[in-house]
Image (tube, rainbow, N blue to C red; front, side):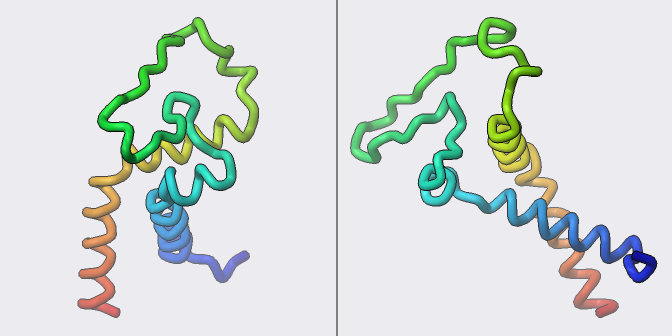
Amino acid sequence: MAFFGLGTVLYVSLLVINAIAILNEERFLAKIGWLTPSRPIQDVNAGFQQTYDQTGYGTGAVQGDAGVKARLIDLISAVRTLMRIPLIVINTVVILYELAWG
């Protein structure tokens, strides 16, 4: 374990976050049954009908009761939503660093 430096840990974590961020919900996650509850599979010809999750805070399932699968689905959704712009910036910096100092 001593051969892992801080740079290696950062590269591995960046690769894992990139892998989570590029998962497509319709192509990959729907096939294995990992859709978010508020986003069911929609027909592409159905128009722009958006579903609305009306459970609200505290009226749905208690957060402690959520299973591992539900928490992983929420984590994937959060990474895809919140890390999109920061990942572009971080990846650009890493690419420029690798090009300059190899």
